[in-house]
Length: 483
Ligand code: ADP
Ligand code: MG
Image (tube, rainbow, N blue to C red; front, side, top):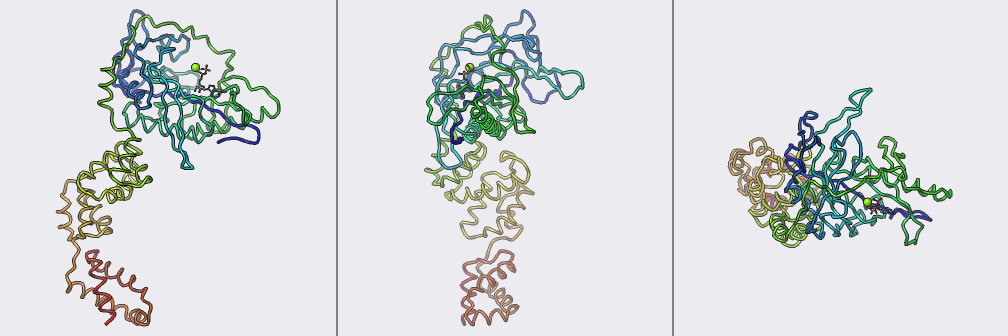
């Protein structure tokens, strides 16, 4: 909870997610980030007279899928509205949106908080609309340049109830939404590139008050931590105003990431009248049960479902399960590896250990990881059968496989001669060498410093190149020392 002696904060979020459709919401223009400016446009997205929109079915599919994942009610009879305003990034002069018939109503999402608790956040609605173009202000000193590639891209807007009571809660919600849209494959969730954008409505109210105060809307935060910072700044600013008896009025503010502050863009009194009216060029969209079922059938397992599966079927602890379900690719890799063996905890350790290190050090993702789940499963099986030891697997086998991912695991083990051995002659030889190199330590051991056994073992294992079977070695070592 973000509060002080007199007030607490109240927050509601409005999140725009760009849908990952191949083409735009109402025409067949391609959707791509970073294409040459104004190459992905057509008379429809530019709003030329006489053109007609046709709704992209995949955009509707994705909106419904997101709604189902958030336990929303899916509206059967959908209509569209025009939101009229004049701005350079809006070539048609209006945006097609859903004003009072959002496709998804109600529902919510459970968030996990840093203190280990969780909280349910209610959604008001999710509606479909289209994106604007983009003004570019920093390429030309005296002009704003316009790129209409984004104009008409399919969006959903997710509107929450004013349920948040801290910046941490808002942050956790954004993490959860990003995870969810990525799992579902409906949005790439990239806040820096603007495919996920968040406006925060922030107000304060006296402690124990049931009524809400006047809210301020904060825009232009291009990261989750900036959303949190903006909320915390607004709470301080509004609290100070309240303390000095100033009236807080409804306005739209912008976040200044350099300063960590917000500044006023426009007051709500001056806000446009959007002259909403029903979109005459699009027929109503009817969603029936068959359509909803079709989407349910192809919906992937949700993170919350996998979390349950990982802790029950695979018997992982909550911590491991959380990490392994952070992204769908990692969860899929885990499941695919577990298909080959029974040591699920071993799989978890390998994915969270060596595999994750590879991903981090290559600034990559697991879908680019060169080794197949089967290879990782084989490595683990070799360890479990006592044929190679973990450090040899991690330090020799794993890198060798990575540099030649098409090779069979067994082949690499053979080539590098990694199978550990319990051969007594071989082990005796090594042990004698190490003991004679450490004669004084042997005396100390015999005088009672039995902790030295670890040091002897370390040296023997090293000399063997990791090939000595540790259990066998230890019993032979103790036998030799004690005689
Ligand atoms: P508007 O009429 O300004 O569009 P809405 O009632 O539609 O406002 O709400 C827009 C967003 O603002 C929602 O996310 C909602 O939860 C949030 N919100 C509404 N009232 C408050 C408030 N007093 N404090 C914080 N957030 C609020
Ligand atoms: Mg509103």
